[in-house]
Length: 260
Image 1 (spheres, helix red, strand yellow):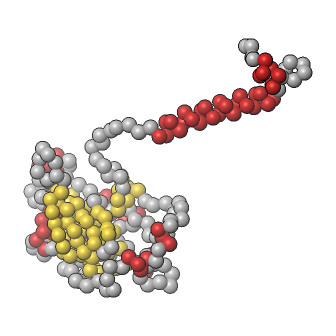
Image 2 (cartoon, rainbow, N blue to C red):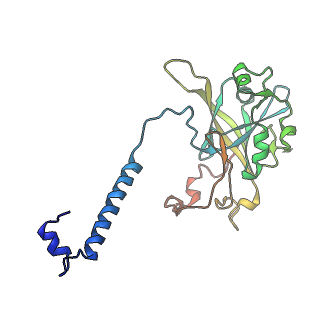
Image 3 (tube, rainbow, N blue to C red):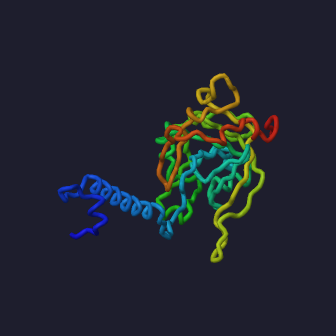
């Protein structure tokens, strides 16, 4: 290949041989070009329509009372918190939703990764009898003794009637504040309900607390069980120092003391 005279004079030595400088610059240009192609690939997004949008939330075992005052325990993961209030998304016809509507109180038991086997034993079980047709189609079965099949035990709550799950390191007693339909679509009526519950008592395993501070959970010790796209995951170590964490945690406390 012929090169322009300028390139010859710049990159060739006295014997007419191309210098290492030319080869190095040519190599760098190729690396830059390859990198630019990768950047284009990284930034490119494509439109998709996944069946579910479960990008990852903590698993909760909800304790509610049945009509006969027996305990129902159900796993779910459509939950998020703001202050001491929590939003729960539940199927409107589900047993837990009906219990919560009637009794207006529950316990949010948060399992750690150590309880994943117990949680999985509750999968595809329901307190509803008969089992609703849509759940039959997904392989659900009626189970009255959910505690027994999951090898879980209970202890009395402080402010609500449903019992707490001993094996869960975080137990949040809560009362129902508001409820509204959820899942509005132009083609059909909502089939779910959004429950706002207010936590009135929190019970935490002492091993999860910041050393020497009674009312603060150490996030480096707490390893919640996470469900993402219907699969179980845990949390890894902290990956970056958060600027938001510089704000004293006490600044977020809504009131001095939580009461029912």
